[in-house]
Image (cartoon, rainbow, N blue to C red):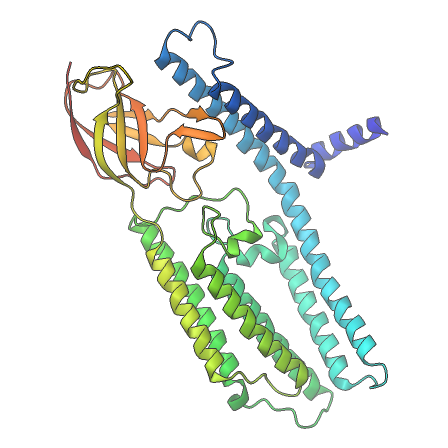
Length: 412
């Protein structure tokens, strides 16, 4: 059996990748990187020929971790295709499972009351929407199926797009339901604007919020006031968290308020399937306040990286001295590690520009993480190619944003 599975995995790998092998390979690469990082942090594994030179051993350790990080990234890309295939199949199963759940629910509640035209119209509407979503998922099967329109440019689930999509599905469901009711000859079908004005207002609000949020992010990125690093893969937590994975109050309140009002609209549509759901204007105002808070958070998040000062790094027991060629310099500031760039691979893309020389920041491991670089400070050796004199120093982050330039004096 094990031989057959190995042969099957090999055949799948030749044909485009085995889901189980891709995922297990990525997990093994991550485990190997963590073990290697902790081993080097404890001072083990460094070649004896380099142990006498702190600078050489630090550079060797950094190169080892950078190579291991690139291996993790490569394995993650290999596992990404299989993961997207599972998401595609899972979303289709969820969509058609919802149709089946609606059918079973209507069949159970029809006992005694009988089957009505409204039940038929609701079931037909669900089938039509499921077919449309299946077509969308089929077209974008390589980008996550149904979730493809909800992904932002940074490969994260967009909160504004998801909320807008939920309201759009409810509105389309309501219009299709009324259309099928009219086609079935049902009397008293009300398509008047007066009852649906609240729903249209909320739909316009969330749609404009999606466009405005995208515009705010694009303008702030272009102005280098916001750093965006592409995520390895989208996660459901993206709807409620910032790029660093921490819960965002503005996102959480926007999702919760929108979901609560959406449930009210869905319940009203279910209780009165012959007209659009009538939303009280108080709830529309609540959504408007939530939108204002959400967009305000978009305007306030992030910030441009900035250098405050550059000093000579001093080890314990060293004498105070000016910066000389070959010394370590410590750069203090903020925004050196943007949100979402705390992983090992983005950290390896952090560069310090010292005059005409570009120096990569060495990774200094500690148990459970890295001591260098950090968001507020980083240490880099002054390259020997830097000529003595006045030299400008700046930092280029993993997002490609360059900080302000600070001038230092380098002595011979």
